[in-house]
Image (cartoon, rainbow, N blue to C red; front, side, top):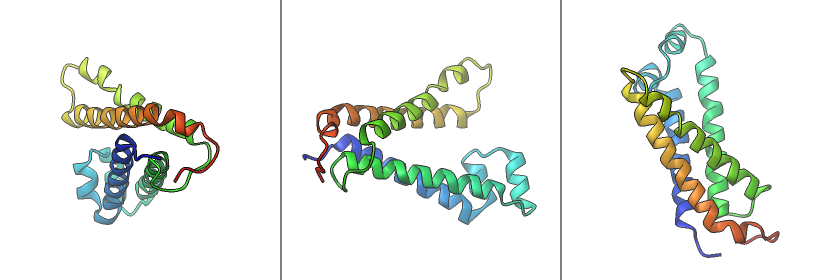
Length: 146
């Protein structure tokens, strides 16, 4: 299968986001603050509560899994189960989260983090959606194409 640059890019973006989440766990409150985590959760981490770390680790695992699906869809690694379903769902989740920019724009004084994070995630969603659409004929094949 020819490589799909859209899904390769999507995989790299998700991998980078996963690593940034791991960076927050490793580097603590300063990183959580710089990436816009809610202050009450950051204060809980400062007081020894591991809940935010566990949530962040879960997100990192999800993002790493999404990266693997993008790479599989691009033909870089072996085919994964439910390829089309997973890539459509990942695209929809990223696009849905990105579209939260619409209510943010209607706020009188939106937080810059809300604007930038929505735009970034919208870009992720478009990357996955375009890559999935371009790979669709090959994704419907049952045999491995990696």
